[in-house]
Length: 351
Image (cartoon, rainbow, N blue to C red):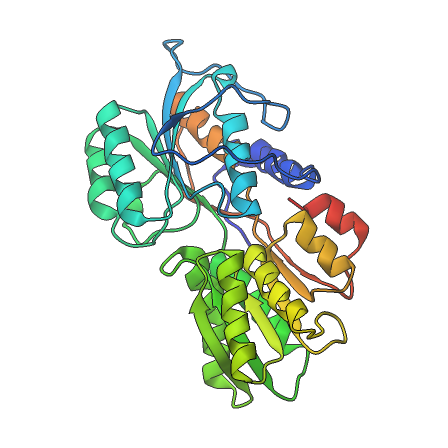
């Protein structure tokens, strides 16, 4: 995948970031309970890049990190763990974390961090819109904003850098794979993530476009399960109960695919390679890739959660008075097919 680089100073960080992804074979530890704002605990820094001197004054770099609920999914747990390993006291940071799946609550957290006088505001937005005003406040206060994981609809002058996934490409890669299955008819249960998020928009957009363009592609049911397995199970169960034919589950994360499969199993409907229903997920949790390896699922799209080493390098560059030549880096990602996935893939890419 073509990606932009942040400049020569990021070359080392890119290698470290990809290595972190490759070394993430062990399942992520259970995330702490979400709180409005919490102090970052001392973290195991084995997976974090080596720290340089914090600030010229010797004081810790104050960072406010706004993320989605770490209990949302395995991806989010891995993402939160990666951030806490890097932005620790041992690495020269004074970090606070705020979690929410709601845009207004995230914006309120951003306002509090601005009032607290953080040096950097790191943001994975719940929704792509509504951020201009608070980011302008941060800019006026001399606070640098760095986007991670997800893009937003805001003037690029309002943030210093963006280290994100190409959600549109994730969706297009998945839909291209599905089209390659050459089904006579596509009757799709489309289970969406939180509406308005960059992940939902990107993964939905490609499928919506394909359905609009092809006469033999149909959406049987399209509904948000808000990344939740139980909600996804209920959606699929409702289609089964209605007696509506379907042959594809397109779930926008692994947890929702898991919930969908639970409904299929309860109804004794076969799924996976060569079976009645194609099952598709996103995020590449290790347990999900194992379902592909067992051919119980058909496809899983990667979403790389390991952005912290890139962000760390951006901050250290700015702290040393350097400049960022390019604002955006796109994480390297791929899709996996149950017919070709290997145990080595599971070990390397499973989060």
